[in-house]
Amino acid sequence: MKFRPTAVGYLRCDVSGAQQQWDEDQIRSVAKRMGYDLAKIVVVDGRGNERPLVGLKTTVTRLGAEAVFTASLAHFPGEDVPADLVRSVDVVTVSPENTYARAGASS
View 1 (tube, rainbow, N blue to C red):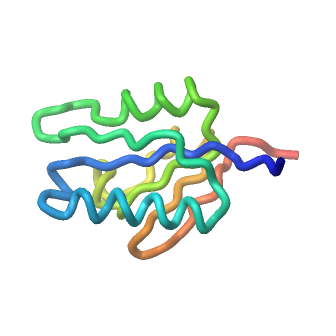
View 2: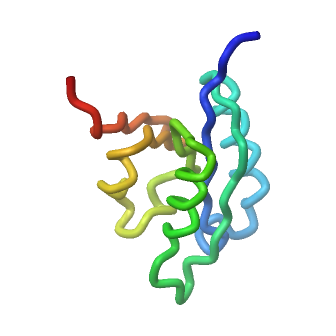
């Protein structure tokens, strides 16, 4: 049995809107193609939510995830990968497909 690292998906439903299911399908597809076991997709409504990433970070820690997949940078505040997130996991965007490698461990 081959080990596959755990990943978590992340979407803001206020950003995805009517294409939420498409975004979820794309996250699943890219995670599978990259060899991850996508354990869960965290979906939050960012409207009026001052801290939409709290649930994501809790889930990442609880599951011991190695990566977070999201549809695009638009799902993060300021359309930028949060520094505290990329310190602990790789962040992968689906569109455009890009990997932001974790910066936490130094040799």
